[in-house]
Length: 320
Image 1 (spheres, rainbow, N blue to C red):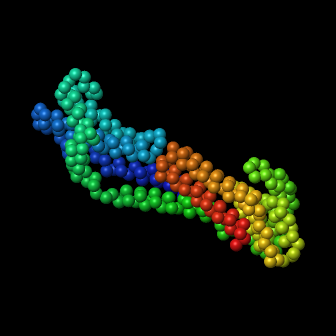
Image 2: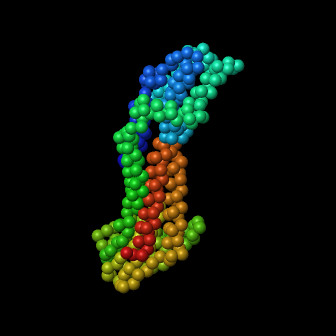
Image 3: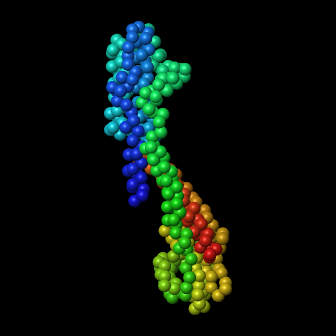
């Protein structure tokens, strides 16, 4: 539910900057084209550079938000109004071709001025940028931008915490007398770590009933011995993916733990591996649809889940 809210709210908040982009009429009023000869040429170049200043803001925001870059309808409309349309109008007013200058020296001089005012000549572009910021109040702190920053920070903190809590590190120790142990089967495990696995369909300990769980043959024997004592038993049950694993049995003053080179090593290797794979996939896939901020949160979620699961299983193995 939190993820769905952030997926909707974050992109919408990220477009709030459009409210601060001035209209074409406001830019024309702030940087009018006046004078004759070189003065008129210089004024026109300053106006086109001002339009370019704001169209670049829209382009960079869209490119930062999503890969591949896509404009929202509002961004597309405003980008067109600040990019190609004013450029064509200014050039038409000056009597220049809409795009390429050809052999026209005055047109080439004008293009050089636009590039210098836009980015190439810092002695020309920096003062113009300050004029633009002063004219439209862009150097003032925007509370909406601060709110978005806090939202992103909260999202990055909440995601790994939620992943960690999903592992339920507090719910791995079960204490009480064993009431019943369900039937099961012995299976030969596969993959990198081959071992015989005993699967049981349920376990009643105290007032709690545990569903399907897995253990090694040695832990199955320890569980049967503990059940035979008729006294209180403490079990440590961890998890790898969808499988519960019995990792420790304590009864009659004796604690039996799963072999560190078998069941525990399997979890030590598999949990970090799968959590990192899930984090990388989330970073790639989510960034396509929801942007880098939410993608990072999704990656942090899986990393937090992996850390939580690892510590949960370590606690179950230690039996504390």
